[in-house]
Length: 309
Image: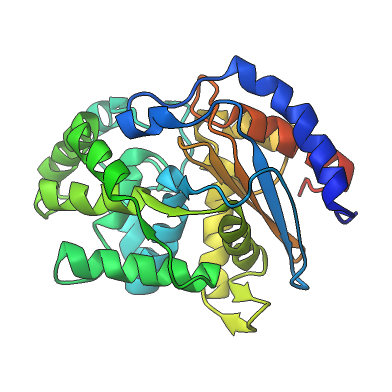
């Protein structure tokens, strides 16, 4: 069942917005505290090029953990599946996204999956390039290609705020360096990772990227295969099993679509062969997901029959 109108989406956003009062904006990254808790917007990009939206879809969102899906795709293109999964596992975890527990208690410091912070750091470590600048330029160029938007860049303010407070991520890196999962300078890896997380765009860009994954790596607007089919399939699988942090199981039951969230309040969704979804709602639940965004996706899934299950 397709989305029929912007007015229909506006009604759903208005209903989902009632839940934002129960969430809080991320405060452990100082620059993210400036967000308005009551904001909620959505864009749906269809494979025929039509787009429906509601809310302030031009508002900028930093990708945060949504970037983990995109760097995973680039690392798989750069290095291949065998190399990537020598460094990081396939399995979901019931622990928070920034947990260090499994690195401490497992026989090696190999992260369980690419969607937790430890796994994402290991994946970013694999991005090819001779310097932080060159690797960042490759990540941004890849994301610009996915979004069809040549001016996408990163927020220097948010990147610096994240870098200056990344004490736990530093600990994750040193655990992994001890076991040879990463072998580069930790500060340089964190500089790259925090800038990757601070790449910013709007809901329309996010929905356009979601559409590329929905179409198995093809941008139907430009008729350009950007990601190999198998790489897109792998990324969507992780979105289903691990994409909503340690709420992924409940999200699969209630919503049932491949999606990835970030602590800025963004959510990217992909409905196979149909459309991509971009959501921004900075009020977060206790597990770091957009509380209004999840409610909106739950309502949309029921109304438009989006669940893959």
